[in-house]
Image (cartoon, rainbow, N blue to C red):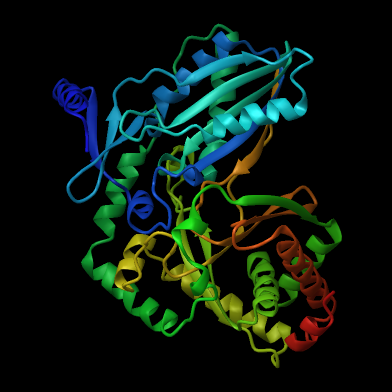
Length: 453
């Protein structure tokens, strides 16, 4: 419930045009209708640290941030509770949520600075009042800084971070060069994209896609249904970063080319085999994210666009890996072609979210393709390092990113369900299956499993 005084202020602001109400987008609805954790849980915070080298003052950073906030309406969003579901409230103008702290004293060790960052990440957001992001400049010296950035998943996804970093750097350079022109308006606003999506996903289109998914996912049994519960689902995932070598990456690419598949399908096949061996379950469903930014204009817009596609594969130990890879690749393409808003898919299957239970899948697998480039401009450079993806719905996740000539493999898991030792055993199994498959693509899957460490 909203207190009477806050309700009165909201009504006044709406009447004088300071707020514009809009319906939730389909991805936003997931957080309220199909998530195992409450929307206000800190597990829905996307968190990163931006390492900045070069002269950077709090005044200039705040002014640059104001430019980005003016351009990107997602940074001016809050949410008004409604009878059926909330509304997005877009502010016309919004002060920046920025502060600065000097951490140059010797007392600020790396550990102390990390504790400060974790405290910033964990600060709750007021979904009604906003803003739903915060930026803190930690200055270790005049030309050595950390920008700690936290943003709620309701207004951002992984792609958003790259957009934010690039625009902030451009606005900063304009500022220090004395250029007064504001950043140009985005070609497609986030609420504009949401309106297009709602117009497309009407009853007939949703019903047609639902027919496919009801058949495709029918009869699947969850792996850890007996472990689900609200007490295991809250809070951020534990995060462990590992790497696969350049030799493994090149081997996987060659295997994909030889099998008429993609790098994604190849990595997914090895992962699902490893997961089948690790869990003892052969019928595996994973959820994989899709960017949902098919138009060039949307690639320049901050907001929560990403969707989820379930992919199911029954691992056959007697099949040859090469044959299975081709079948999995075809299967994956069909799933992407039949993709629909996840919240509507869950509703169609009668498997909507509840505390501790994520609809349809328990495991997330991703080959990240959202651009988060290092930025190097005259006088300043910036590198973004992820801390939390804000995707709270799954029990176990594997997120892979090409980093130069190797693969960064990030493991995310519920610490109350899995130990780090257990997850490391899955990591070794995944790597071993992949290496063996690259060397012997026509061997039986059962042999890949037997030969693992």
